[in-house]
Image 1 (tube, rainbow, N blue to C red):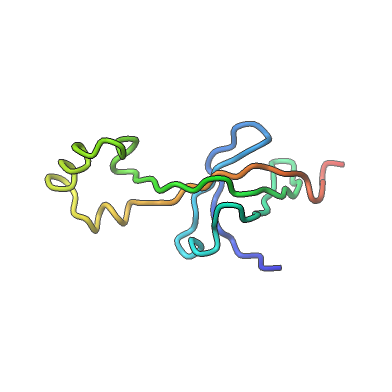
Image 2: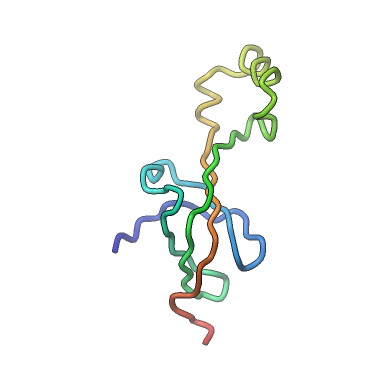
Length: 104
């Protein structure tokens, strides 16, 4: 089994799902439907399935759908290189179950 780190958990809403930022070198390993293993705060090892991957850009925020605003930002404030360097991939995963429980 490959113990490669593919990301860092950044959001955990409840016990059933979480989001993680995909590491730059791991993008080819992270795909919809793939499985990931992580630990919860109790130290339990969890098996999860990736259900969504989206590209986010910290400079633009939630305005990705506003093409007019994106065009204005690109021409006035940021070069294409700066915009692409601030883009990250955020994956959502659904917890399928506990593989090994440290709390039992």
